[in-house]
Length: 268
Image 1 (cartoon, rainbow, N blue to C red):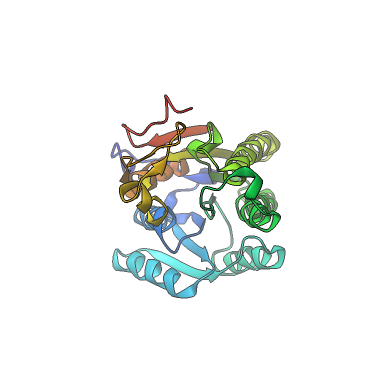
Image 2: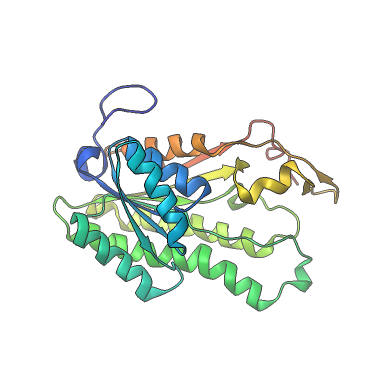
């Protein structure tokens, strides 16, 4: 495939060329997931689009077909074990293998004083951001161990919050710290089977979730609210394609992509 940055030819996951490779993207109906799915398709991957709403998945699928790519929309709730199994079974039935999994699906909650966070709110965030990543990773690892050639790559969508929290974000922050643990454990356990795992930590990409940063502002460590800069989600997609396109002998374990002027380095 053509490297979207440097123009050279790269071998993709499991040693196959991207034109023969299959990628699953969760949360592919909008935002980072949609942009990444389109970028992977443009790079030559066949892409399985996963999400809870078929209508928005179809919109992403139409954009991919508009650029000559191959895509399949599969409704999936990543918090449901059976639904995740069906996602991978459908993928194998269509294309026979999984070379890349982008664990992108995630959720957050409005900033809230810690003592007011309910268990229902906590469970919802952990179920999507942690259990969902685990369930998809477990299925992917099983497939990647069995397929020929063996191996593949798993990329987890972390967050700047995997390093430092925003105020009043205990559930989201805890979930993204857990994703880092999942990334490290998967990278270790996958070594013997040519399964690479890495994480991309994103700060302030332009999506519906960051609309408030340009509107009413975001709560800062000093209690104030300020508008924060964002950057195009398509740049995250370019970074994920780079990670996905590496030969399995190389791995980006952690990458941070952020708005240059966001208050991250000095946060807290």
